Image (tube, rainbow, N blue to C red; front, side):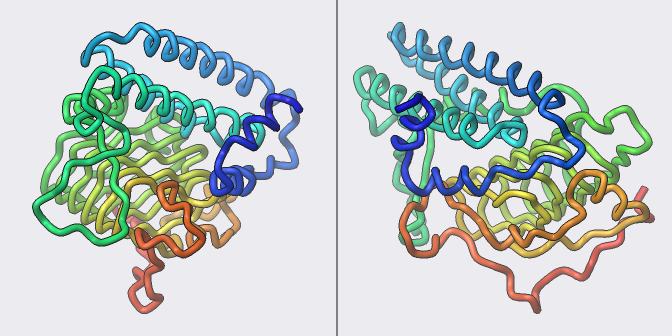
Length: 325
């Protein structure tokens, strides 16, 4: 039995089914030589980071060591999410299993050094207010969360630390186009992003409305609440979202983790030139995947209670942001 078969069998059925669905078809004009080098570069970097984390785990002796390892594992997970659209299904499956194994090893190491109740990827202290029943939660000790968050908010182009304002960016009129863009620590803002970008990252978004044109790669969302997102992308991964609506066009099934009261509906955005941009980005076709959400923390056969579809009568009117400047 080969290595990939072993990795597939050791994953739970839900994850294996997800990866099978997550594999997107390459464009007819894309050749193997076009993708071989990026995939090889990614796998080399991934393997190097994995080896470094394993070594750190074997040498961990203190809480500071565990903080650093937790940050590294989360960073590697985000690195995989950002590049997963490039990978063949068996490579993606193997990488996801590696991350799962690292987290298991981390839990074992933290249990031997610290009380599991205080430092774990899986446990969360009881809240005073009542939470919805059967909704799984996940947390890391606060010091580790702070480090993960500071790492996640990347340097480079973006909107950060804004409140009660309107933010507009046209990627067709600046050098950010085809690159990455980050939005973090926004409260009560309206955000309009026109044109095409390679990847979008959202962190700590509160009571905002976000409208974006096509994303060539991935959208990664972490720690958002009471907001609305209108997004088009090849892959969308959502962590720690609460009471938020997503209007999506997406090539693969959206992934949620540690989220609750999130709702989904189809993409509702237009502006001059968007149809051509969607087609050129491989997003011209409506796949219907906005309604096929995978909850990584809900592995039962019944519907996850953490997400639902938005009733059609509550869908947004198609938003035209052509005049936003």
